Amino acid sequence: MISFFYETEIETINEKDFSAWIGSVINSENKDEGHINYIFCDDEYLLKINQDFLNHDTYTDIISFDNTIGNELHGDIFISYERVVENAKEFGVDVYEELKRVMVHGVLHFCGYKDKTKEEEMIMRRKEDQKMALFHVEQ
Image 1 (cartoon, one colour):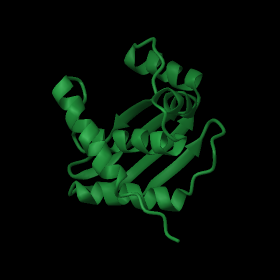
Image 2 (image 1 turned 30 degrees about the horizontal axis):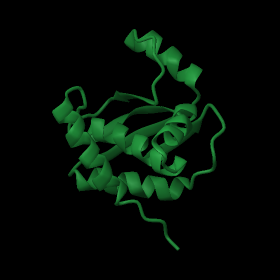
Image 3 (image 1 turned 45 degrees about the vertical axis):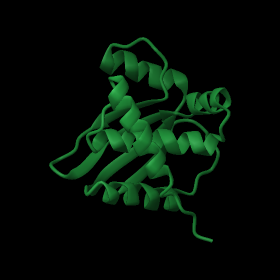
Image 4 (image 1 turned 90 degrees about the horizontal axis):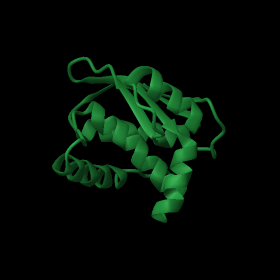
């Protein structure tokens, strides 16, 4: 089950469409959908989590806490919507495109993909692009 929580205001997203998409991403990786929570927050909220749990004193767009059990994905994905908007401007992309990239990034971490090295980062970017192409909105 994919759940959405809002600690800050964001532009409205269609939770049904986003849930279906994340579910298809999970299935495409031969994983099972467990309980995944998306928590949308602002920079200060995520900075506090970064400081308290990871001992990092930097702003970031996403922090994911993986509670996967075997092949079933579980976890919390915190996203700074404020940072997503800023990154979209910086990279010259639509806010929804950047939001989808960050959302799928967290799930890909739960699937076992890393991004610490240049090689891992390249693989992660390719996977993000592939999975973003799975997003379909019913007409």
